[in-house]
Length: 369
Image 1 (cartoon, rainbow, N blue to C red):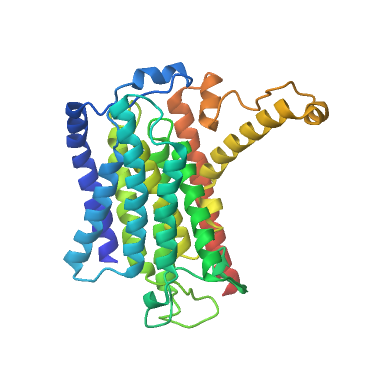
Image 2: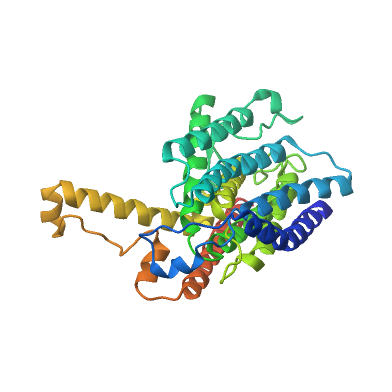
């Protein structure tokens, strides 16, 4: 438990202090954020704001974790290594995207296919390693499960390893995309991610206290290295908390794809390694909601342009848009809401999702007990 406090605290201090110097470095290098021309006009004032702040979040997380392990003299686990690999690997893909944007001073960075290829390589590597029998612990637990999971494994659904790897790829791709879509207003993605990782820290602590390695009962959890995963989750929570000081409106530095993809990858990794993949849809409900808004917008727009039957049934014109603009937070901007108002209300939504998710998690244990 001491490692959890140390990891979170060290990461918070490194992020809080390190971001200040990162802002100066980015300004000197000319790494300013380009803004899309078709976005809300209020965003044009952010042009030139230092970007790639995710580098600080990732570095603070990694250093915070390893300093905590060094101080407590405990060895890192395979699960923690895999989670950090996903954080750093997805962040590296985002860094390439950000770097191309600032070098070309254009909002179109890494081509979509290239970005997807990079994320796929990271996700598939993580998936293969997570189900390797060689990484089983003394109790026979692999980092990832060969079952579908909500709060714990659905034991009656046994999947082939290659199917599990494909599902892991899908979860990582969806979560990284979701966090990246939410990262459109000052502090929005950082604050929402901080709450989700904080929730997973508590999930990991509870799973460790009720681990089947400690007490074999009907309500115990078959999860490998839950306490070490809690240290990583605490480090990410702390680094997001420190970064938010500088990222809150008006942002002095932007998270960028480096941070958004890295945090999305780590979020997916925690859901996979804790056997709570479907619970992530509840805890990370804001990211699901924002992603759905984009999917609905694109689907309705294309259907209304190509299908006369669709237009007649729903009585819409060609090129109909459900929202004024997507992702969802931009819709409310177009309605005249202040950015700070949107961010705070979306944080409240995230808090409610986290509360419901943790409530479901605990209620399932109580019902089982």
